[in-house]
Each structure stands twice: as C-alpha cells, then as structure tokens.
View (tube, rainbow, N blue to C red):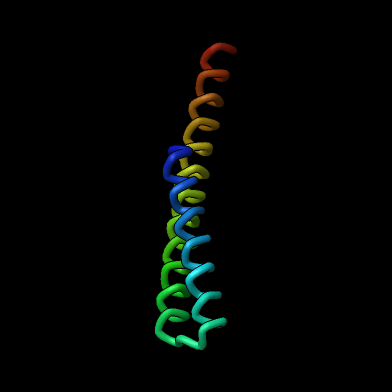
Length: 73
C-alpha cells in the first residue's frame, strides 16, 4: 500500500473525527452522524491497507523461503 494512500486515509479519519466533534459542540446531530460515518469509512480503508500490507509481507516471505531453499540445493 502506498504511503500516499495511508496518509490520505489517516487525514480522512481525522477530518471525520473533527466534523463529529464540531457536531457535538454545536448540537448538530446531522453533522455528528456525517463525521462518524466519514471516520468509520476511513478506518475501514485503513484496515484494508493493513490487510494488503500483510498479504504482501506474506508473499515476500514465501518468495524468500523458496529462494533460500533453491540456493541451498
């Protein structure tokens, strides 16, 4: 996952959290809900980022293990 995507998703989460807090302060339930939705959406994207990174790490480890085995023959 690119660093640019990770930063974008973190910024979206922060924006949602800010919007939710502004909704709390201004007693605006619509803004609260919108901010919470944005925050949860960004958290889901970050979870996807982590899953993609873990899959890539597993793929790299498997490739390294095969390469090591082939070199030991």
